[in-house]
Image (cartoon, rainbow, N blue to C red; front, side, top):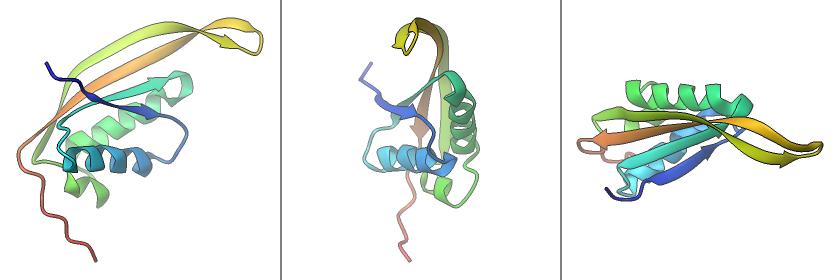
Amino acid sequence: MSDRRVIFVGKKPLHAYVRAVVKAMEDGDREIQLVARGATISRAVDVAEVCRRRNGHIAQGLPASVNIQHLSCESEEVEGENGMRTVSVLRIDMEGVGDVPERQDA
């Protein structure tokens, strides 16, 4: 299996991450992994669902089908202000199948 392009989901707006997925798939990377920690996990789930359903203007640039292949939920030890703490991590593996629509810049 080839390496997936990893997109770390943080606190930017949802559309920024959807656009990152679209850009990666336009560049030929059809296998993407979204990675989120802690409070940003819900945003990563939203990004995956917007891409899977191809909702919204930005997501129209995705391939004909975007499939969620695998979900991984784990925890990591990270050093914080008050020492080590455990943070939840979600990894969402997605694959774009089909042709990417041609870009129509306005």
